Image (spheres, rainbow, N blue to C red):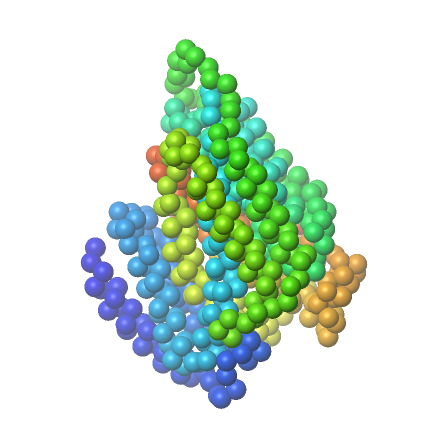
Length: 482
């Protein structure tokens, strides 16, 4: 497939979007600065989200219709859609556009990738060796362990530690897709609901004043949804296991052992660095007009050093035994670079509330159930961290206008706690609905495909697995708890 046609189409679409944006109010009030940049959402047209729709469709369709081309050219596709939005956005809004782009990448994308890279790198240096046979009982235990530790080492850390042992244990089996799908449900998403370390949205809430252990109050909802998923997984795995041609018993069973155990200590360092950045306030510094908390810079520096230390002290044979490669994290980095750019208008419009072109969405929100479904739906396709942040702020504005943030958070927990529960559950649980709902989903899928598992397409994952299994459970969560 030639890339010339997309480039020509890119140019034409840029011109089209440029014309649309020229109809927007871009008065001198749009000087660089965070306060003025927030007004963008009230003026951006609904059409400005088309590049975001485009990159989602590309992620969904190219692997289906042109898998080889996609494998080599996905960075170009990401840049393609990012430029479609960025070029006219910069031309029309100038200083405010520059500020908004820098804000998104410096405060959200870069820390996001640093954390994922560190967890991916350190977890890739932990090898669970020994004879491990993929029986239904063994597989349930692995998923249960991953779900339990995801809130403490992050969904990315738990996913990277356990996906390879799960795949190795079941390497002899023909039917393995369901193993990876249920792993994404539980380990890469639902298991991260109990601490701010588990998932980025909850960490943002922690930074804004939600107590560190408040999220432990979500235990009952997490157990409520995890038990039926684990039960269904066991029944499904037992069915497929019965259809497999059983391999001969290994002549020599090797005891289970962990190689690269020092990386567990480094993971503890990651937990400490993230926790430190939420409780240790060192003031702010300004870089290119963006105010960045010094503790956040310190956290990111520590994370990078921990990742580099892991690479330095981990033996090459451990990485080789894990089948470790950089492709999964590269895929996430390139694709999410485009997603974070094209997501700018969608998030800005939502933050504008009633004044934005999606004002009807925020106006319609009344009950905790509404917030659970809307936050969850957006988290499935948008990044779950800004989706959480948008509705978190809308709750503070809805109930406690003019109250300082940390005081308002205390009042929200005391007086309207169910609303906070709703957006927390929505942003974490619904990340499992699509491959792009949470970054570990992408990495797990990529590792599985490298191991020879033929994973379903974007729509296949949703239509065959996620929607039929998860949506009924979300309905039950709504009826029982919200």
